[in-house]
Image (cartoon, rainbow, N blue to C red; front, side, top):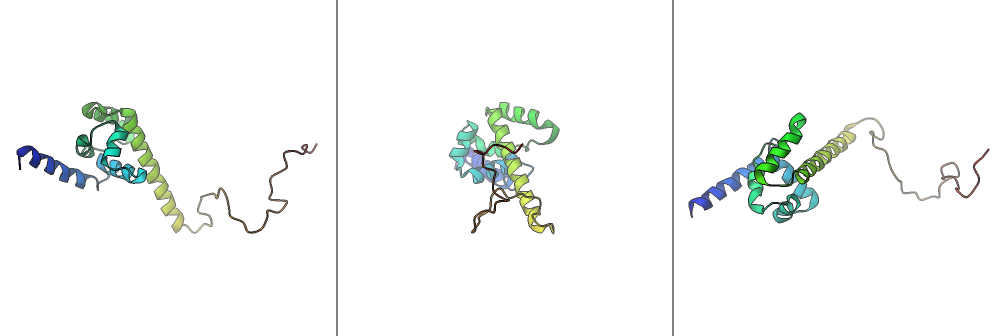
Length: 142
């Protein structure tokens, strides 16, 4: 095994561990790939980079807070990835995390409905006149 192979293997192991830690960008890359059903090639394609760069990206600190934009820009410049695609990936993962936290919070609340609104319901019986939408073909009451 060459020195370059050993280096690549160690880099890959470090990246795999980083993917389990929210501090690292790897955790966001892993979450996004899982949510979108992407393999490494698909993830690299989304970021417009090579698969070779993914372990290096995974070891970066995950951008957050007030330095989010500048951190994304720095990472994008260093690894030659599209900053808008990287920012979109990170914001998507943040939104998914927020939804997951809200969903988990709903199951432990004692308030019926838990803060989520139902957009639609399955019904066995037809809607009553009071719950039906007004007929748009009729003139409004005066």
